[in-house]
Amino acid sequence: MKKILCVVGTRPEAIKMAPVILALRSQPWADVSVLATGQHRQMLDQVLKFFGIVANHDLDVMQPNQGLNELTARLLVGAGQILEKDRPDVVLVQGDTTTVMAVAMASFYKQIPVGHVEAGLRTGDIFNPFPEEANRVIAGRLAHWHFAPTDRAKANLLKESIAPEKIEVTGNTVIDALLTIADQELEMGVDLPPHERLILVTAHRRENFGQPLREVCRSIRYLAKNNPHVCFLYPVHPNPNVKDVAEKILAGLGNVVLCKPLDYAPFVAAMKKACIIISDSGGVQEEAPALGKPVLVLRRETERPEAVANGTVKLVGTDFETIVAEAQLLLDNPAAYHAMARGVSPYGDGNASLRIVERLARDLL
Ligand code: UD1
Ligand code: UDP
Image (cartoon, rainbow, N blue to C red):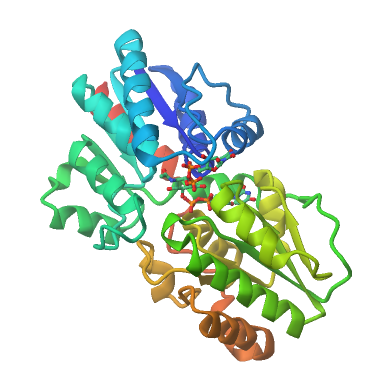
């Protein structure tokens, strides 16, 4: 038996690690345990419950409006203690959060090999996204296995002199998660006013806090006023730097519905129902093309250029004029809309977790 410790800290890590945990659990050679760092509390618990995963360890590190230094320190110490006690043969981390960087480092200090799921995403700009670009570069330096979602991600790793035999191109596990439910009849569970079309909005990036996020909210307000038959659904991230701004600028409009973060299945239902998605999320940039939904990305750069290249995702930044113009174009111009709403996904076929399991089995057994 090989002891595999799967680590999850935030909502997207849990969504993307869940298929790997479930696939590993069906392997007779794998003794799988789950470390929840609790970097997110409510949003992590939502996802674990949805996938029926109970964590074996929970560091419960989240503090309101947490700072990165304090968060990193709590994660490093807490993860170090679990690794000392549990002594896994392999640690798996997913993505680019502070949980990933700190747990990769704690594992390195204990000389336990790390598998990095969703390896090799890069913008090349250490401040964009912040702090995720640095987190994934550090995790990449420390990892033993690099599970790259695309050939492009593999090429980024090769440029950083990662040995080719340590890289496995797998697809993104988010597509595995999505495909387990996307075909089902899903309920959003949110009461919306009568409307012709729905636009779904999410935003949470740290580099957008302050003026950029205010611009985003102002543009949604403007679009809502000018398009009274379109409804805007915005599940608001609980970070006070997001929530306070969104509630202040977007309150009191009949066709803007602000709600708490949705559970995964209701959120997928909302993506399916939406005609357009406006978001700075990484995961949403990967899921929406698979569902045939255009995404206007509220960022200047993306580490997920594949969907931009195939024309299903467009970078619009956080400038008021650009967001308004690009959203209005998609609402008014069917040709522009259909050019983006094509349902082609460059991020995988739903078998990424199986490829990860196969590679681990090949190397460990
Ligand atoms: C984190 C990750 C980001 C990822 C995002 C996914 C870091 C530094 N950031 O950003 O890479 O894209 O998660 O959503 O790793 N909060 C709650 N309840 C929750 C979750 C958050 O109240 O369930 C509030 C807390 O006040 C918390 C704050 O949000 O302190 C920020 O959480 P944090 O994980 O530090 O940053 P995110 O913006 O969520
Ligand atoms: N998501 C969700 N409920 C919501 C908003 C998003 O379940 O209210 C899911 C979404 O489908 C995607 C993931 O959360 O899989 C993205 O998380 P987030 O945007 O917080 O983080 P990022 O991907 O940017 O790191």
